[in-house]
Amino acid sequence: MLGYKHMVHSFPAKPERHSLLAIHGFGASGQSFRFAAPMLTEAGVSIVAPDQLNFGESERPEGGYSLYLYAQLTLEASTAMELERPFLLGHSAGGKIAVVTAALFPDAFSGLILVNPGGFSVLARVLLLADSSLFRLVDTPFFRKRILSRFRIAETVEAPEQWEAFCRFHGENASLDIDRSGLRQSVRSICMPTLVIWGARDRMIPRGTLKRIGRDIPHAKIVVMDDSGHSPMYDDPDEFSRLVIAFLEQDNVSRIPEGWSPPGPHTPDQSGSGD
Image (cartoon, rainbow, N blue to C red; front, side):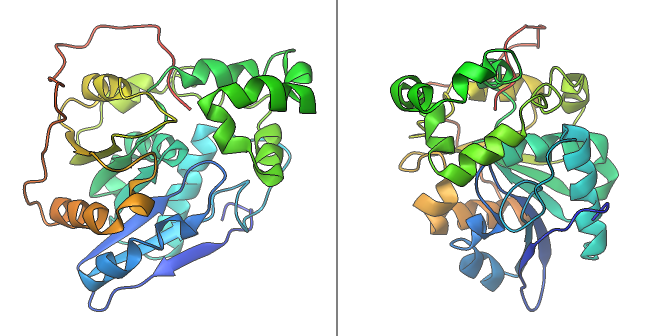
């Protein structure tokens, strides 16, 4: 796709009622959705899940990464797999790609599902440090074992291949940031049906992220899975699948988190955009 080699995982449903183009998170692959696939495909939901550039069995170029590129690759995957206005699903960092793709190519997709998405929290400030001269200090065993290990983000780069993927983003993180890329206003223009599934026990992305999602996409339905963490499709694939199916079938899936209220009118802020 676009000159890059990609691995695409497919979970077909027969007969097919809906198609879902799923985008995995950092350090993962299209196999991230395999546990939810049996219930979804049984309900007539076909899943196409590419390994994203720099991950899984897809190509790992040394540079040139940006949100624009990932969005174009996502659109190209939909076209190459002959999907007709699929629903777009993104988990974690894949949620950031999904929301940007939906903003840039709204006519290509029927709806948007975000699962504990990146792009809306202050974690971006940490990632942007990796583009600075401080990276020489970060890229040392001492820093990773004694300092980085104290932070939640360390879980995403524990394995050597994950750290290598992180290093390939060096110098590119501003281009992978919604605010620095100038795409925040485009995200706020999203009007397609949107579902946010949030694992309440997420140790990676702060729960306060839900408030910014509510400000940026005020029509989104927000559903909290109380017993799930950062990856609800792993922790409770049956409940996760039920919520996705209900959304695709336009049933009522709203379950507002306890203690959370809809935000007021949007006011510009300078907070980070998430991972």
